Image 1: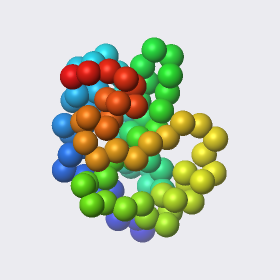
Image 2: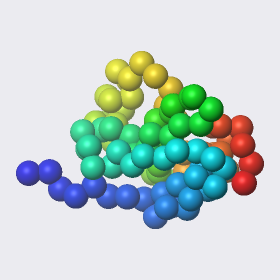
Image 3: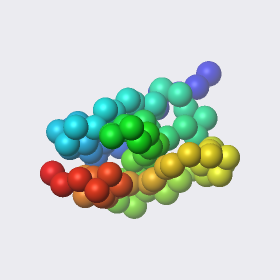
Image 4: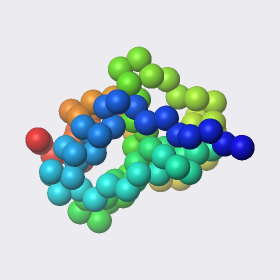
Length: 90
């Protein structure tokens, strides 16, 4: 049985900042198996974001998932990093 997904403390702040800049944000945390935390869309561009704390590291499952993913993805640990992916400002 899969344990509940752990959501990093900074995720809510990052989601709020992205939404305030016009992004659509969908949480993927419940999928598990290395799937990144967020699917974010802006201006017809869709990107996977893995949210980590300041010292967070990718798990083996996350590394495997992202190695196989053929789309755009980023690991972010702050609002500034997340907004930089879309070249928007708070």
